[in-house]
Image (cartoon, rainbow, N blue to C red; front, top):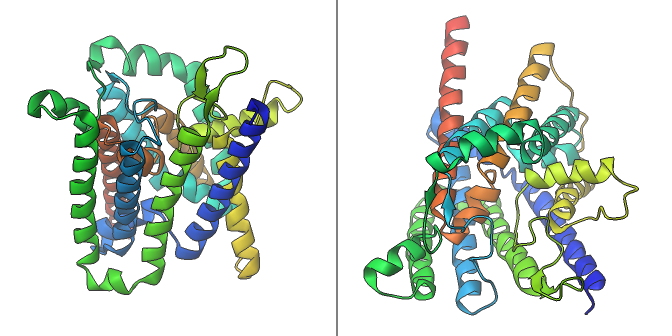
Length: 370
């Protein structure tokens, strides 16, 4: 298959995965911010278990792909030698605060756009713009020179995944450790998830966890296996159809920036739709189709100027934080964690902490004003 045809195939498959993601997330009310809120405010773990199930399925499936040679996990943005710990922490905290102020993370924003939320359209625009200027603009200067500076980064010789870090200690190959560690962690999560009788009875939660986890695995296979081909210009093997020119899967912050860029430079022939951009479109379309079929499509507007202000600030923080931490609750929280990257675990913990702290502050303010 020639390169242009292969890129189109990658893009169409990305769109298809996004449509499934959006429809399933809408149907099951899959929401990572909601999962944290349920635990922090009510001690209710069903939606959190759905998120954990998606993590376990993605982790096991991704590492099975890697073990059998269908994916090279060293060729991703998550697994490199550079470990900018301050960027993971600051970016994760900002994203966690932002998604709480904006009433949902990046993927939930896209799902709500498809369901008729005008509020989420505003969030998407601010999220995408903030992500773009963090990638290449004014926020990028601070990100690179301060948060990712050598003084606040650690360099690992063989990558930052848990297997790579442990292989020199225990003497096993990273490939064997990759499968072993992912199996142990994944099965431990599955035991925790399914020991709860309430979760076992929740069909929607089971569906959300399994399908979204499998979609992440599917994304890795599409870009990391099907998309690994010869670049016709350089004649070198590379990953076609992705913005990073590496293997990618589901993530929604940087792709939102690339989506806005694609719209802005529509007539530029060098500006093409990529896998990430296609998934952004796909999630919105999938959610929209589900809303139409179930007659749940509803226009939603801001309740007040203050409500709009909080959502704008939240979207901006998500855009900056998601790029700085190299992912969102899906991009790092499921896709990144599936690679067993140390940075992904740190970013995920920071996102959860930022969101939980913000919720506690909001609750205290509500009690004070009551």
